[in-house]
Length: 307
Image (cartoon, rainbow, N blue to C red):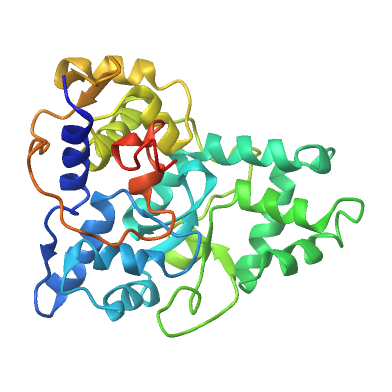
C-alpha cells in the first residue's frame, strides 16, 4: 500500500519537482535537454501561451525564456491540440504520433460541440478545403471559418473551422507563444510546418486506429511521468476510453500497489518512488499544469480541504 504522501512524492520526483535538473551552460546539449524534458513530460499544457515557460523554469535549473522561445521559432517544438482535446506544447518528434493516438478524443469533442452544425458536410472535403487554405497562409479560426463559408454558406463559420481542426492537425505558429512577443493564434498544418509528408487524400478519418502496442507505449510514457496511477487516471489524462485492456496487457511488466482508498495503482518497476518522508521544496506550478490535471483523483496534489 502506498500512502497519499508517498504517491505525491513519486509524482513530484517524476515531474522533476523534487530536484530541478541542471541545464548545460550553452550549446546544442542545452537545447536538447529542454526538448528531452518536454518529451519526458509527454508535453506541457499550453492553453495559454506562456505557462510552459513557468513549468520548465520550475523543473530545469538555469532555464531562461530564450531557451524555449528559440525552440518554438526553429520548429523543434510546437503547440497543438492533443490530450483531452487541449493545446499542448510538444516536440516535433512527438507531434504527429501523439495526435494520431488521441484523434478519437478530438473527434468526440467536436461531435459533442459542433456535430449538429456540420450535418451534411463531408468531413474529407472539409479537411481538404481547410488544409489548402491554412497551408497557403496561416489563419486564425475566424479567418478560416469565414473563408470556408464560400463553399458551405449554410453552416456556421466557427463550426467549419473546428471541423478542420478536428480532421487536420493544426499547429499555432510564431510569434504566438514566443517570450517577449505577441501575436494572434495563426494556424497551419503540422505537416507543412514540420516539413513532413502530407496525406495524399483527406478521408473522414485521416489516420488508422492506434494499435494496442502503440497505446501500451503511450501508457508506459504516462506512468513514467505521472505514476503510480489507476486506469481512470490514465484515461483522465489522455481523454481516451477503454484503456483497461491495455493495462492488463502490461500487467506482467508492471508493479501494482493499493492506495489508501483501496484503488489499484500501476507503476513501472524502475520508476522513482522516494518515499513519504522525502521533503518537497516550494515550487511554482504553472497555470493548468498537467501535474494537477492528469489524474482522475487529484488529492495526491491538492488536498480535499482545498477543493
